[in-house]
Image (tube, rainbow, N blue to C red; front, side, top):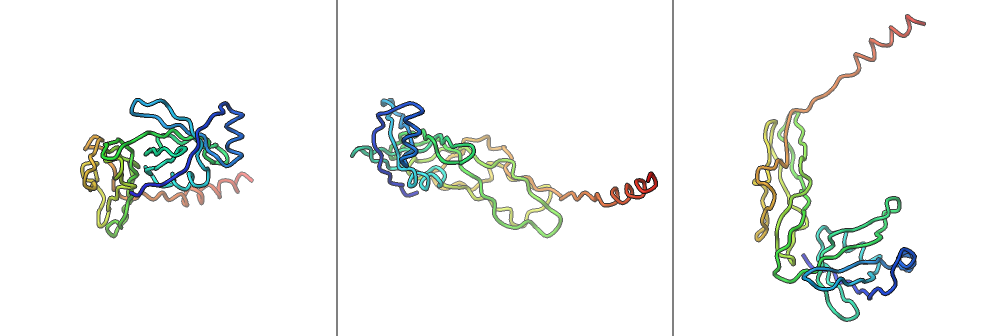
Length: 198
């Protein structure tokens, strides 16, 4: 995964009023922490940062007043209505360092012909990987599968260097017969009863 470069400035004003003022100026308040260093309070450019963190587990190369920091977004707080980013917690990482992250599971392929459906029991899986080479997604194929088949965490094809931290027996995909409820008959029976009362 390529690094997303962002230019930040040190944040000197704090409090809700200062945060609102920063967001109005197109900045996102954030903190960088980790490796025993002092917490660094910064302001990030809103537009560029919002685009950068759309990629799951994006590695951010942040320039803070000329000093470089590699970091991962660990917590993104959004306005519940506008969905704009209000604050980001960033974890400092180093090249070659292993980190634990949740990775989205992407399902592809078509089930075998018939009345089959799949339920995705786990949308993400916890893995350990090099901070500079984190997978965006883990793809699992349901091609040709039928009812009664299951795909467990241990069945996932993980990229080289990625280690599963989830219980290997955790069910990820469950394939079953589709159940169709026919409610039409009940509605037809109810209609004459209503007309008799009238």
